[in-house]
Length: 308
Image (cartoon, rainbow, N blue to C red; front, side, top):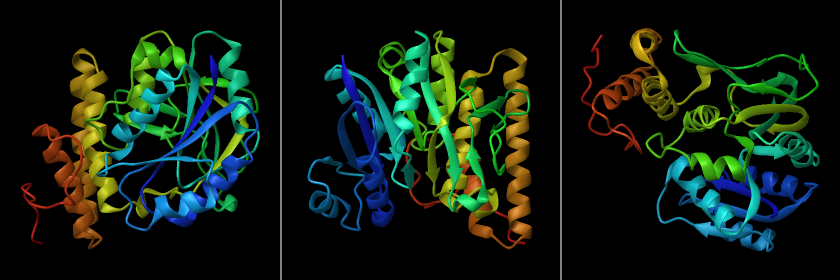
């Protein structure tokens, strides 16, 4: 098998994309190719990349396919070309030159490693760690990024985790062949958690390697999340725990998730953030009506919204 495909999904944010690609240029290891999948950006991203990075292959998608469907194209390409794996990156990331080499060492150390994630630092770096892998809490229906906000990781050696964040992680060919790609119902957010859970059920393990490092330009606090993010986070959290829960625990998790969403919407109303509250309610409504995929920017809200 040949080397690794580095795949970067883009949607506007051209300066961040340029910085990401500049860091990818410095990556050590068996990079077989770099592919940018552009989700119908409106800021001239494809044209600018062609000028600045002629070695990069660009696929211009005819519409915004989201994280799941967009990256599935890269996964399919890697499998068809016999590559060892895919290093998926968000365009708002910057990678350390040894990030891929370190993750590959861990991936190759055991046959049942399905995916490896790096130590992810927040941006700017003064905020500390963004995530060192993730944990799933089944009965309370939530996940957390391990050690977020810490200034140093508690462990410096590779170790297994429940999932790794989708902003940057290495997926192995063997796991992709057994598990398939991302569930496109999610559109964006939670699909990497879903994939990691499916991989674990198929007998693969998910690891994080603190020796591999990258930076992510995303907020640490939920206070900074946009209405669009809140919509997908709400709907997809319910979808994940419903899809993977078992027996009575599934219903307990669903109850916790619904209660948490209703409470969050009320708190957002009290803070005079009506568009954020509406997005949470719309996410709840979409789950119960089984409305997956893209959210059309909150058009046509049907969930009752308080006028107070």
